[in-house]
Image (cartoon, rainbow, N blue to C red; front, side, top):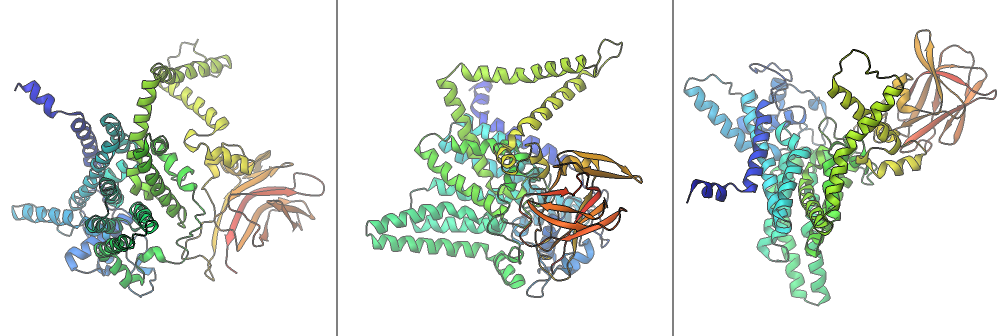
Length: 634
């Protein structure tokens, strides 16, 4: 066998693709520097290394388990800091507040191995810290997270390959591995458990699909054990149980329809075995949560944490505030692939994966903080990465089938797509030169790359202003039509509620939360609708509404709200309209004053609230400096 034959035999496309993705991941992983440089020593202050914010507390769990054999974090918090103030958070049991321990346990072997390497190196003359919070410990502990994310791609490829071509499966691996949030949470912010979440869910889906149609004790026990791992990684992802539950429920119904009572009883027994295995495997976390919070879901069970009517369902996908489809458009494209699945087997799998995907959208849309605070995109949706991988594979195969059916169409579409930016640049530059905004007949030289990029940016912004961002279609059109606003306001307002109140503060006597903004040109671009006159009064920026103008402000808290308007109005007063209801505001003098209105319950709505102004002798009624909203339970 010649070397070229040997190379062709072993250098397959799957190996090439996975090797390239792993090389990219490792290159970026090793290039990430800790925020706190130099040697890390205990100071009692929070030091951002690689474990940041939530990841900081997950790592403290790990240190406490490994070094102390307990979960009393008082010494860890005193040593390494408590940036989110968890030591003051109350629990129903009086014990210390605790982040989920499951992911800390999953990464414990990697930490133990890293610590062993440090001890061995120090025994041979090294001088690395052994407290476990230094950069070396954290980097190589979190290397396990990178491997978990990479294993997700391997499992997803295996699943996609059973139902799609090799080409489609490999394209899907590239799309998901480099074009979705899995890349960020596996390579850059590895202190969070999202890559483990993606892996455990992928294992459940892969095994469920591999053994589909088989109903026996072993299969359901293994599925239950895998679901237990899902709970350890991230409890909310247990909704993936809908796949075996749906299949098992249909089989139970079929057996009952055939009057096969023994078979039906066996199905109930299999369900019991799956439940027992799930409880057993997840017990390290659920038992701890029961001891610390009197609830198997721990801190997620606190009052007002979940609002099961999912008030922020579509924000999870379409809001510019960490919406999944807005930050990772390829995730949108891949989910569309589930819709175009070809053949009964693929459609069966695609249907179940679509259910799993939207169950997670519902769960995340039900949380009091749908955006998940800081991070890249919709971080809590990383668990359903397997849905994106399979959907992307189905989409690629659908495109290949379309190309086979209409071989001349796709090349022409691709050519038109490649030429469109160049044509747009020419059209834009021609207009700008004709308007004397850019005059190239002088002796100046130009940064042509900058000229091209500026032109493309202007065209894209013009398209976005007129038609909305494609990654929010069709939601932005429907939203604009429903609220009577330009489609461009979708990105500025949808999901951007003001007056956000934490779930622990909600409805608590004595709580006062204030939020507001000055009527600057920037704020008006977002919140002012209609014609507003902008100017300055005593050196302060002000804005005056003309006839029909309004302020558009979405609010998180909509009860127990007092509205404060700071500005000057003409006596004897004006009327303030809130979504069609009018309230009189008395004015005693023209000087700058803060006018207050306790908004009655039920007046403010979810979505953009319209605030209008009118007075008897016509506009302008008021010159505004700022508007504030105050939440204070009465």
